[in-house]
Image (cartoon, rainbow, N blue to C red):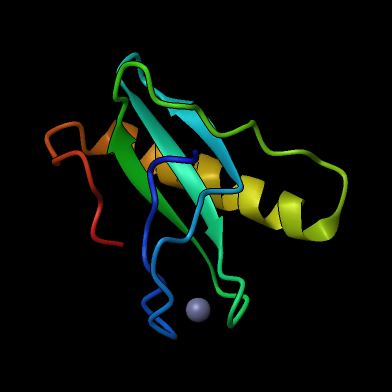
Length: 91
Ligand SMILES: [Zn+2]
């Protein structure tokens, strides 16, 4: 069972599972999402919950994953610059 589910703000699809994630410091991850309904791509930052399944690191196999990977690294960099923010970035 996947975790770190999020909702698509564009079309309202809920329980979207992350397709990839990268580490964000020692206690956080940035998850990348791709909506199965409208194909929107976004990221969301989470505090790691012990015992939950970690999404895989982004693969560089195709353009969509490269795009998502770039978004993930960008978001992680933003998080490093804003360490005081809560577990979830409103981006
Ligand atoms: Zn959507």
